[in-house]
Structures are given as C-alpha cells and as structure tokens.
Length: 128
Image (cartoon, rainbow, N blue to C red):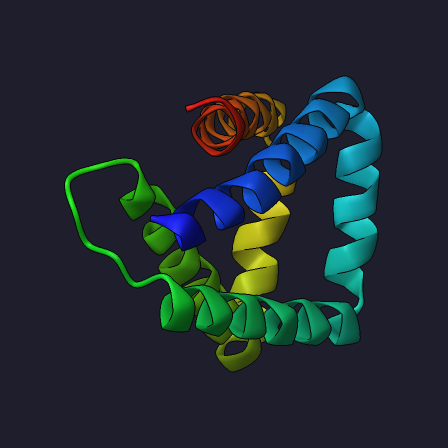
C-alpha cells in the first residue's frame, strides 16, 4: 500500500492543479488545444510521454483490488492506451481531440472531474 500512497501524493495534487487551471481558463485551454492539435510532433511527443507514464504506473502499480488504489491502476492503463492511440493513430487522435477541445461543456465537466479525482487521491495519500 506504500506505493499507492506515494503515487496518490504525486497524482492527486497534479490532477487538482491541472483541473483548476483548466476550469479557470477554458478559452485559453481551447486555444492551447488547437495549437497542440496543429502540430503532429506535439501529439507524437505527448503520446510517447503517455506511454512511458502508463508503463511506469502499470509496472509498479498493477493492483486490482476493490479499493481506492485501483484508481491509480486504471489511470496507468488509460495513460498507456491513450499514448499508444496517439502514436499509432495520430489522424484519428487529432480528429477526436479537435472535437473534444471545441466542446466547452465537456472541458468544464472533465476539469471538474479532475479536481474531484485529484482531491480524492490527495486525501487518500496525505490524510488517511
């Protein structure tokens, strides 16, 4: 469980910071997203980073239990699969990502979900 707490202490605040920044600056986030989608190199590098992050989490924390640490495992697998998708299918990733970045409601809901998930993981890591 020590790995779970350490990873929760890293991922929790990260998700909260990104979620708050995104929710506070939705229009800026959309502009950044458009610029990001216009550069295939950006997408490739982001895919590689997601693969590395996902592999690190999956290899160090592949815990499938009916408790909060499974959230970290799921995030690892999502990062790995998302990275593979970005690297392997860049045109489709740009198409889907472009549609998502223009949906203000989706961005707000995703940002709020990041804040809640980050707060929960921070709580588990720092306070429990």
